[in-house]
Amino acid sequence: MRRAALSRWHRVVIAARRRLAASDRERGANPVELAVMMPLILVLLFASIQIAAVFLARSTALHAAQSGVNAQRTYQARDGVGVDGATQFLKAAGGWLVGWDKAGPTCVTTTTDVTCTVSGRSLSVVPGVDFAIQQTAHGTVERVTPP
Image (cartoon, rainbow, N blue to C red; front, top):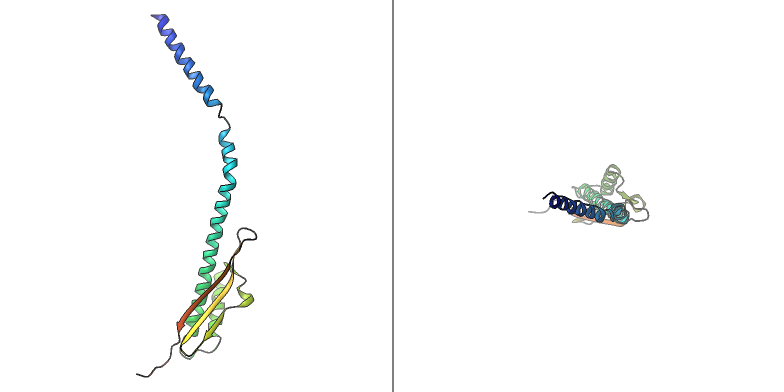
């Protein structure tokens, strides 16, 4: 009986050693996998930040154009007040939209409508990667109309 118990324990020990030896063959595989995947993870991280910067630049340009329209559409507004409103907004908004001051915001006013356009480029998080941004807002000029 003792011999049967010893051979059973012997088989268990041999099986455990085989399992340990099999798992030893893959030692160091995790650092290699990480080294292969890390560049992809970094590219995805920086791409997502760049996309967020583009959307923030678009939002900034649109809000500046809307500020220009709101200023220019008031009753008997002087010429240039819309451009001043958009410029004031862009100076306060931070650096998400760069290069807007080269062309500057433009506002075109007719007797019934106002259209303001703001152009620039998105902030570059990845060197050499930026996108052209142009947003336009439109509104109706406040005026007295006959009943």
